[in-house]
Image 1 (cartoon, rainbow, N blue to C red):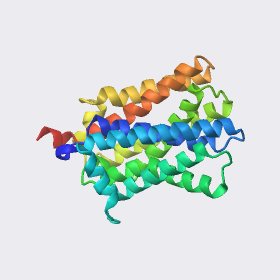
Image 2: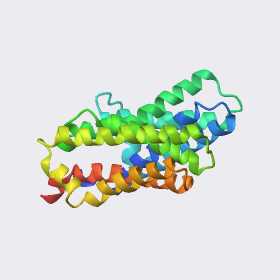
Image 3: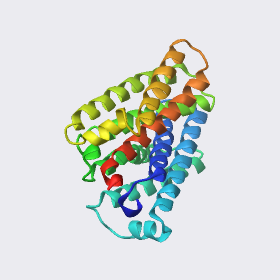
Length: 255
């Protein structure tokens, strides 16, 4: 976030934390320990990688540790950093534990859920109208986390039909929320919405809609190339965050 600009590292951080976190939250609905363990690993890797990208974006690693060390309960950035750290600790404890105590599972699930939703809250806390103009961003990112989390589990070999149905349902919710967000914010953030639909970030927006949602939905309905459909869903999850992060700064980046 150097110079007031949010770049590719932030989009990647949002994406990695979301799909890993979504995979973990979904895995908790399975009875077999292997799926739960895989979900914990995927979330841990996603959150750690995301934290490293966040540190890299800050420019100086010491700034992240200073942020954590201080107590700033009114700062969305500080609260998010604390939740990120607690989620990482909870996931690590689950990974190294033979038995999963209920309290630790619940604590970690809540922290991971907060990490996934926090990314939208972080954007809303800014004064940029495309991000703060509607209350839907956290819900968009939550829906996308479940869509991409289910796809990630499929890629890692879990072909339970429930995952396909879950991804299908949340993809539809995701698109409806994105369209509602665009309509809601249009009067306040016309340049950003225009940049998304027909401007410099239209490739990312329409890539998300076509490659990340419509084609995978068709492929899943036809029961064809399930792994490829899941990979396209993951790509769509990244494109979603890319156009939201960059289009939201259109006016900022032009002046």
